[in-house]
Figure 1: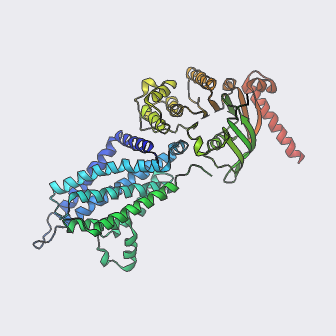
Figure 2: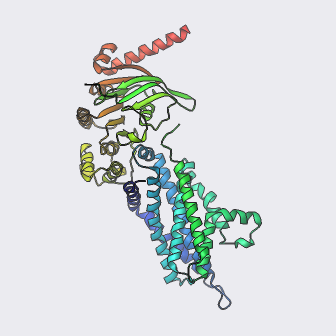
Figure 3: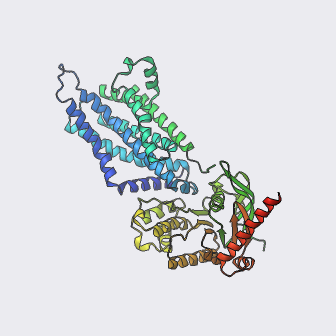
Length: 251
Length: 249
């Protein structure tokens, strides 16, 4: 690892994004707009007294799911371009270490993800009055970890796509099952055994679990830290797998 | 004085990709501090050979060393530069940002970056996005990204394609100056008149080394001062030779 090369990579990726105003706008604004849609969907629900609003549950989870989906897409396309344009092969003939490249990417997109989740969380709290017990700081933390998870999976999946068209097709394969099974639509306890078992190994499940801990407790719980730790482990594992797909040599 | 180690040395070099046997046993050495031209018809294996020397193409059999070290070794990565045929740069970054990024891998300073951009004549366009440049300018960005590292061995795959004659002449002058200061250059080209800028030529045909000679020897062997014609004569003679040996076998 070489800090100079990692930082240079982060800077380069951010600079590439900076030239792309439309993507930056989409990354920052779309989650907030979708959150508004969720809010107005449940606007007229009638609730027994003291019963939490659906928005407080679904909206909260959306805060963590957006960065995951967006960063997965952005990363897999960017990395695929790097592979097909020959710049990746060229980089690997220089002294850069694979880890510098991957961490450079992960850092750049985590910065974007932090901005995204700050905007979305601010809107959720101040515009729509999101009401949970825990601190918004933890919500942002989980959102950023999810974003890095998206980056890591995107880096890995880009190795299995030859075109951008194929890369986008990985979304239904990698992202949608996690959203379906993470406990957003049906609580994990109510799933059949097979689905529950699958759900138990999908990374997004742990972040939804962590968010439930944040929503229900004013202070950080042991379960929250455990979920965070598992997520971190998965992210590192996927990044290591992704680094194996970066070959310096073609056969 | 003991002779300097060869910049590139290939021994019985074979490369196959899938079922295609691309390089079929090459033996040659390239001397340091000079320009060596790599010539041959398209499909003769020029790019594959360059990739093998860079260490990005797996060698099936035989060896290739760079400055005495196996090609592709980590310790060589500071010393070799490679400019691919299609420019491998970031279209969505400015010229300067591209050169700065690749320079960062070698600890290049801001002065190195400016120098490399000046060297390829892109100083007035330094802040332009690479994708907005013309084809010739775009490929020069790629060259600048290699120059910024001050490599000891520079491998250039068709670097003058799409350049106007004035610029082409300027680049060859620069290559000559680099060689004079000790850089080894391996340049592939299909423009035969450019062969005269090289001090040594490798003629490649169907994965075999047809000849290693100087431009003067090429003119002599091909029986023409027009290097293109001389090259064609040698290729045709080789084709005839192959046809005869196939009949005989």
